[in-house]
Image 1 (cartoon, rainbow, N blue to C red):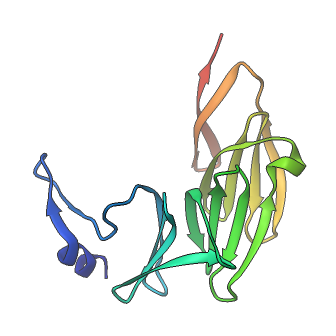
Image 2 (cartoon, rainbow, N blue to C red):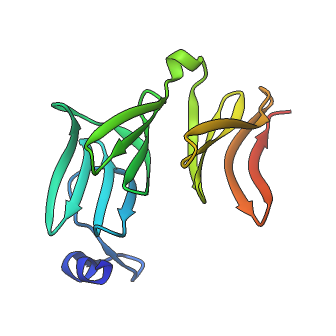
Length: 168
């Protein structure tokens, strides 16, 4: 499937590397892929776009566009970090949206999200949290103090590796 899309939208860059661009004239922020339904989702500056069966359509909540910074797809659900630093889940089968983490209610802004195995890791200004996608529950991984900025996390075997900047 990816090869057909790539051949259709294939371009050659200055570095002699091929790339595909089927969303043009917009700024992409993140992409996710539904392997079962062969659908590509793109978070962009004009909203959340879906590419399926050679067609592009905008996914909306009611009649409103959805603006996301980072997206992941798992088990028929698209998870996204909104521009308001909230975490939402969009069930693509039931066309239902659920707020998983509301920054205003929680009092702490999400800065990054990362999907590792069956958990979404949320980095806020004061915590690293794991949201279990099966159990639909949070648990705290580690606290973050104001002297540290966590840039990324990775799970290697049973060890969580974090990339951070120490401000001291």
